[in-house]
Length: 188
Image (cartoon, rainbow, N blue to C red):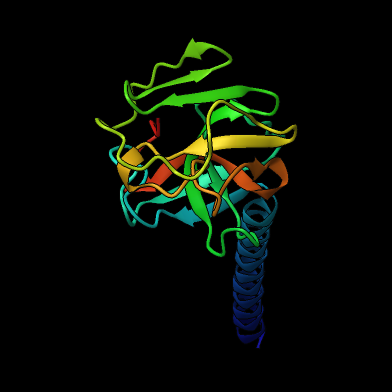
């Protein structure tokens, strides 16, 4: 009888250990999922590239991670812009000018100047700019707005066109941090 009682205690003890291990595993899994959820709701967002306006740096269908956590727009940043009244679908562009800057695009020489200085753009592909847009240059970017262009200038609906125009900084979903698919830490 003692032997049976000892075996039963061992089985009960093993059962309790298994339940405790499963509970511990599920608690850890739930905590990890909660942290990931909070990060992707509050800090990071997954955005899909739609179209070829950012070619060759980003291609149609690429998945990028953006973040607006403590973000202030800066020259050359690749940003995601959320849905707005002006543009019903989200889009990804590069910041060329900030609020208060004067932008001039010379469509004969294909040079862009910001505050009188020609900007160097190793990342863009445009050759002869075929699409001038519907603004007259030079123009001044309003405060709390940015002027954005796609890297593939002849296949980009961007700040040159009134459909997009100046982008209010509150419409920015975030700055591109890295490319998730295909994976690359170098997004510029």
